[in-house]
Length: 85
Image (cartoon, rainbow, N blue to C red; front, side):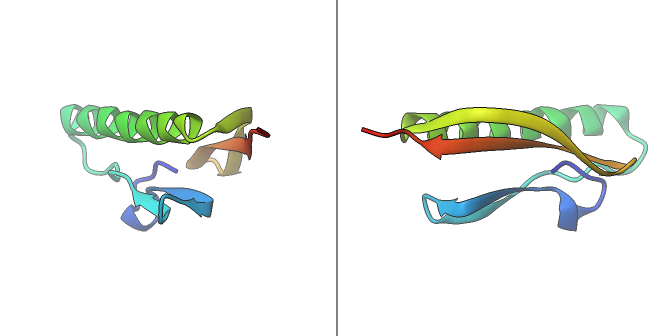
């Protein structure tokens, strides 16, 4: 989830993957467009790396969908399943 609130800016992983159940993302805040663009880019890199790590470990991406819990909190959820050998 990307958010202006640091407590909400994170990747949640259930069940835990490689010992991690949460990865902190950069929170958006202030009026500096340049800083927020840099934070967004860093967040995108963290998300892409995590998705790649899951795929390499044998997890299949089944579905992605947006989840809107409020007008200011739009997230993307990724549903993976462990591939059968």
